[in-house]
Length: 528
Image (cartoon, rainbow, N blue to C red):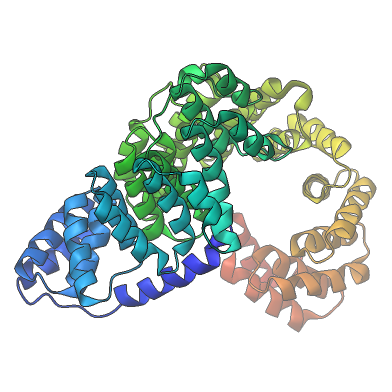
């Protein structure tokens, strides 16, 4: 992840360019229509509009920038290349245009163009990719690629990216025994599964199937699933780009992630890991339909089929399609090869939809699939779902089991303790549970509020008050904590402060709490 600060700087600079005012001189109507389609999330229409605007104003740098990004979104390499050329001529091309140029050149078997692209990469913030890319180009030329890598100068970040490719180039060069030694670190306590997969595919491609199978031992991959690969700059370049895309996943760098995914797929259309990362980036960028289309291209026998299923659920959730996400999650929870994680995810989605009885059943299935590995978290989630469904008789034993399994986890301690307080049950036990939770998380406003309410319900209002004041200070807009604080003030005879706290609570109150707080403001506190 050391690449991230460098790339974030590049991304920030790019964002400044994108935010600059623009006007297409050649065909303003086409540009305006493209911007409208872009804003509406119509990716294909936007790309077509930008293409027309760029054709009408071939030297407009801002149109070129928008056309470039939209072309990458939809996978129009021709438009992206034309737009990038405009920016290069103007001297304002973002550094990642060199990655696209490399992929297009290698795809076209244009080694001279690929070398020129790597020179551009080497002169910018993505320079750590250059040694590995040069090594693979040397291999394609029939040169000693490993020797060139060993002689290459580069930063620690560059070495991190080239070390794994040195092992792959050893295999490509027929030096598999040396490669096995170089791959040894990938078999340690923190195995590099992607490297093992790539190495196994190259070994299989060179006819060394037994060493390939040995590399995959301990993973959930099989050589039959993976197949074999031919060593080339296309293979190596795609893996470098996938590696970087994986490193920056979740770092709010969708533009770069999309570029890397598209470049990797151009070099190797069978690389489903690139497809998966690209779909995630497109989804985060608002292009849900494109993301779902990419995930649909990943077959059931793909090494990343299960990850693709989970990614599809995430895309649907992000797009606000909760019911569709739940349907997709059900297959992971109940279909062939159902897993504990799939059942847990299904339970979470059902809970989000308010289908708490079904959520509790899904968590029960997850517990069944987990067997001895069943964790406190699953018991806690099931108990919470039962409680929200109004089934306290089923919730209580599940929550007690969670607390028994995890006596030092604040979440189940707080939930069970507060649930007991609300019901007026086992108040002494509830107080003890909440005191334990508070010791674990003394700054947690929800826990402080819950513990204070336990004191209040047991008649120790003076002890509750400072906790409630602290919790309200930490969460000044919290309806529940302000209502509790108002109740405590009222019991202590501080009527003005009580109404002030209730007014604060009324602002964020929902459901039954709205009428209850209104009654307190009108007539004070009548009962506990």
